[in-house]
Image (cartoon, rainbow, N blue to C red; front, side):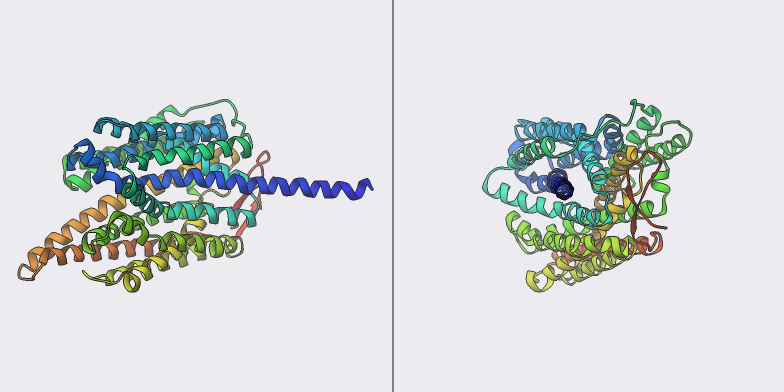
Length: 500
């Protein structure tokens, strides 16, 4: 009798633990969605905030840049803090801090307060994002479960920006721009309660040891690079501040790499990024982030300025893309990843996304959304779903448990830097294309409208080329084999890695 009951109890307990893992995935996904959508939800609110607080067009960029600087500059430090002090604890602290910073921004009576609140959001986001991804990495170790879990996470990471546009449009249209910040409190409260109940307590990885030279060089280096690209978007690539920021930032990053080779406890062990599969996946993510901004930035301009859509209608127009990403990540990418590996999926995803952007070059001044814009968004979404679900999983696979946080932070850093590069690079190319077209065709009626349309087409084409490079990164760098479970060292728990 006892022998027949015991297996049943063991099976039941195992099933309960499995259910808790999937509920925990929901908590992690909510936190990730909050961080990702915050980059675009505020974009929709900017015109209303500008009218309310009375700041200038030149100052407007700081509401975006303050978040990017703090978030991008502190990500690696935030990831290591999670490794050293416990990821669950840092996850909850990041959520609470992000919510409080959002309330401060929503209540902001002045432009300076709003910028400060956005910087605080970025700082707490730098704690939260790597903790979320590393919790996912250490929770799902079975290859089949991992594929499905990263399918969900990849869908959130890939579609969060589009969700931000929709939610920002709804909140701005029916409430106030301030609710684009207050809404984070609802996400954070749900995630904090869920984390306290569902997430396992993560033990710190020994006595805290900080690589101070590494922290200083990489933090200041990333801040310099992000600020340089942000300044280039406004003042051009030849501006002294742009050149100096990029040069100093690049020099500090090189110094950081040299330091990591020599210190006993490096902030970023170079083995994490020198692994061929992880390095290729991180490169693919960085390139995908560049291409993504070609979609969100210039398609938003096209829908609102060329077709005359409202903020709400523009947000609704993007819905097809996150739906396609969710389908592709969970129905195709997640189940296939442990079977065929990331190489093929990232290659196919990059090709699809590249083709989808080329479809957007068919847009005209009076194009139909259903026949021209919608097909492009669907194809892009299918491709991005495969890229994000496969590359995020591969970029965090095979690392030792005590390095999960900093590996997750590196994945987030690649996306953040890629987004900064994409915004500055594509904005500069777009502006130059518009000027050259208008100068070369002075006799055309409505020349400015056609020049702007030409600028969109150039930006879409460049983004398509970048996403084709994502396909090449997947096809040429990452190994073909599928994932397996192996022990990373004698004391580590099983962690999925790419088979070589």
